Image 1 (tube, helix red, strand yellow):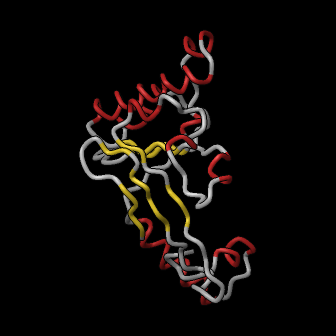
Image 2 (cartoon, helix red, strand yellow):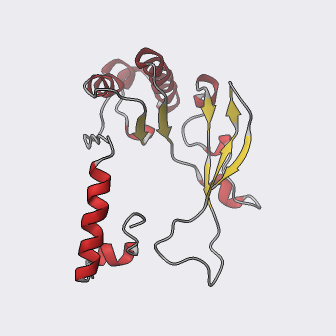
Image 3 (cartoon, helix red, strand yellow):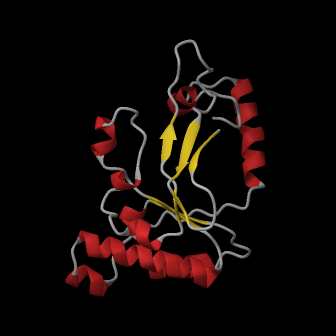
Length: 178
């Protein structure tokens, strides 16, 4: 939607003009140039993610969407609760990042606690099932969507986001918006 300039609701409802199809073809051509590999296998283990990652030549970033869907290894599944399982996953992903010498961006679900806060900005304590997570990771970046003002941007423009660098072992912390 953003690349083509076509509002997302029109794409989803398939209400497209001939001009929209031309725009979509141009956007698809641009997207084909991006070296992006997507694995849609549900419930992969960290070991399976590693095998797939090693097959991608020149891999520079691995994104896990989302960490709660990573399947536990057979041993951890039998012997632990959700907290210990997430602790194991966190450590395994950090080890994988070091082994492959690339950053891993692991997306996590927030619990509902930030909805009760005044400014609704996510915090590390809002990460679901990940109490130990921030101890093992190099950085934590909660993301917050901006608030759309009435009469603001066209529907196809992206909503501004704020990344809150709550933890950074190798640099500054604080909010970054774009």
